[in-house]
Image 1 (cartoon, rainbow, N blue to C red):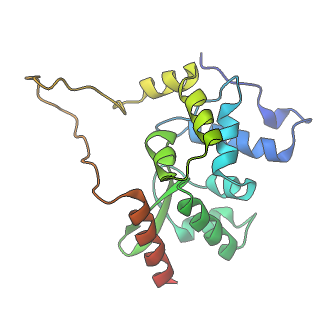
Image 2 (cartoon, rainbow, N blue to C red; image 1 turned 45 degrees about the vertical axis):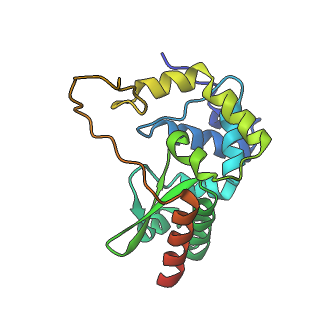
Length: 193
C-alpha cells in the first residue's frame, strides 16, 4: 500500500493555502510520473516554491496532456476570469513549473513531472533552499518507489557493448536550451495576442 498522509481536505484545522498544495500534490501524483506525498513535508515545500496558491488552483485544471488555452480557461472559469488564467499560465511557464508547446498554431499547456520537467525548467534560478528540498524529496522512499514504478522507466541503463536491441524509443535531447525555448514560446504567445 502506498503511503498517504492524512488528507488535508478532511482536517478542518488546515488552512486553505495548505489544502491547495495538498490537492495539487495529489493531482500531480495521479499523472503518469507521480509526485508522491512524503512524511517530511518536502513535497508541499517544493510545490510552494514552484506555485503560488492561485497558480496551484489553475494547475489543478491541467494534466500531462497538453491542452489549449480555451479548454483551460473554461475549466478555471469558476475561480478566475480568462485574462487572469492566461497570466497565471504564462507566469507558471516562465518559472518552469509547467510546460508549453504549440500545436497547429495554438499554444497548449501541460503539467510536467518534477524530474525531468519542473526541476530542469528552473534553468539556473536554483536557490540553496530549493536544492535542499529537491535533494530531500528525491531521496525519499516514496519518490524512489514512484519513479521506479513508471512504465516505461524514466531512467534506464544501456550497457555500451550490449547486443540487445532496444525496443523502447528514447527521445533525443533537444539542442535548444530551456531558457531559449521558454523565451521563444513567450514571444510566440505575445505575437498571437
